[in-house]
Length: 181
Image (tube, rainbow, N blue to C red; front, side):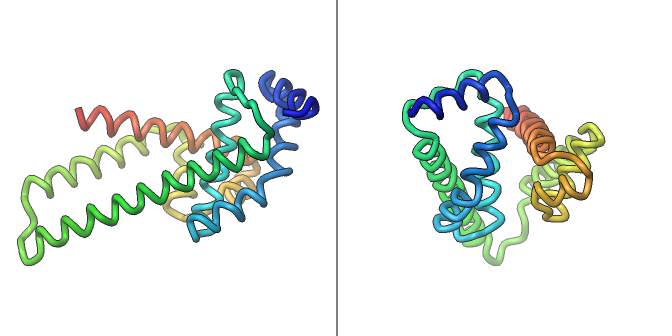
C-alpha cells in the first residue's frame, strides 16, 4: 500500500467519514461495472458493491489491507459476486429438484405448514423492526428502490440506508437461524 492509501486507511479506521466517502466515490462506478460484468444484473451489482463498502465501514477498526485499495476492493467485489452466483445457482437447483419431486403431487401438508410458519416469522420480524429501519427495508425489498433512491426520498444519507438495511438483514438472519435450530 502506498503511503497516501495508508493514511486514508488510518483515517477510515478512526471513523473519518470524509475519507471513506472519497474512497467510495473514487471506486464505486468502476466496481459496479466490474460486478455487473460478472452477475449480469445492474441492481444486483450495485447491491454487491454497496455491501462491500458497508462491510469496510462496519469492520473499519480491524481492517487489514496489505495491497492497494484497488486490488482489495476489486477482489472483494469479485468474491461477493461469486457468492451471489453460487447462491443463485444453488437456489435454482433446489427449485428444480423440488418441482421434479412434486410434479403432479399435491403439496405436502408439513411443507405448507413450515412455509407458513417461516412466512409468519419473517412478517413478525419486519413488524418488530424500528420504524425507520422497517420503512427503509420495505422501500428496498418491496418497492425495489435502490439505496440512493431511498436516501433521496427520506432525506438521509446513503450510509444511513446501508446501516439500517444491515440491521434489518441481521435481525432477519438471527431470527431465521433461531427458527432452524
